Length: 242
Image 1: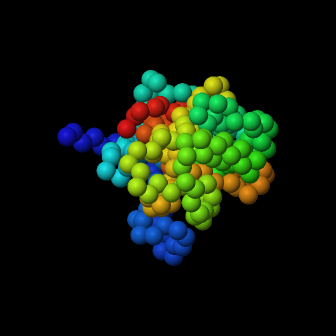
Image 2: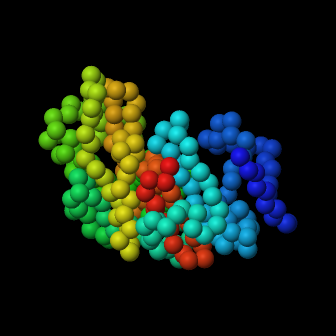
Image 3: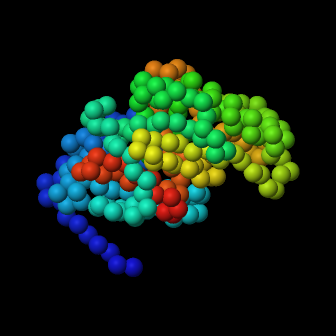
């Protein structure tokens, strides 16, 4: 395997001595945002402000992190990067949700109130309360039609099922739709979150109101090459990348 080394002159980084938060035994964080101290911005001249990653469906799979234009391949579904929402995060315009191929009745204005950002550091996708309620109802209708037994809620996950003894489960598809027609058809590994076989929950949660920003989390990004391009001001989703 070839090893390639790039050198970034004058690269700025920081070390902490009194750290707190939910980082466990993490040795460090790589800043890939739009702020001036991020790796993306500091290495702009070398990589053009573009990078992509792919998170595998399971811990046994292999993903990637790649820098430079075209790093997610040519099949990325692109949506505009909304740079007027803030200086750091990657905002996009979510316009709707589909369940089982059918559009869920949610007004676009529900998503535009606080905006939507794509974040690799958030696990479960958070939605405005109105949008989540509609998604949960549509998903529950599909699961009920298939005869699946419900289970108690788990923490912030409240749409749960008991799959005890089932070797084959068919889930309703879930797709997130964005400005420009880009669509993230959530991989089956990202539709539900399994606490145990007796408690498998829809892997989306409510923000509790319609005023808080929506976040597309890493569970729903699995198997996609997620592309961020500061130069072209686009975010893309390339299916089947890992």
